[in-house]
Length: 81
Image 1: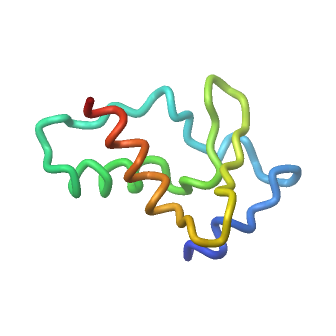
Image 2 (image 1 turned 30 degrees about the vertical axis):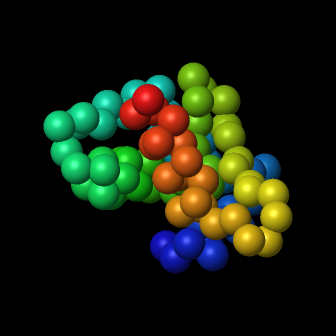
Image 3 (image 1 turned 135 degrees about the vertical axis):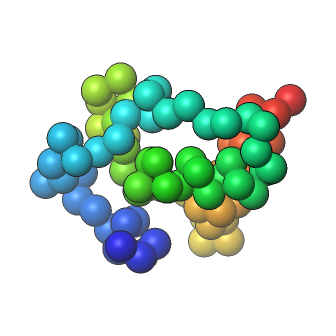
């Protein structure tokens, strides 16, 4: 699925059993930053729509200038501090 398609998932019709629970993800911290991001994206499948402790979460970034890549980089940077 492409990024634009992932963004357009309808939270009301998505099958919760097909979503990954973000709390179950364990990233290998010995990997490089780029490899950690790739591993996260591979595991989560859709970074716009996932579960957190069983609750469906739909991520949307405010503003047209901010991409999911920007948001993920900011998230990973905050986890490394």
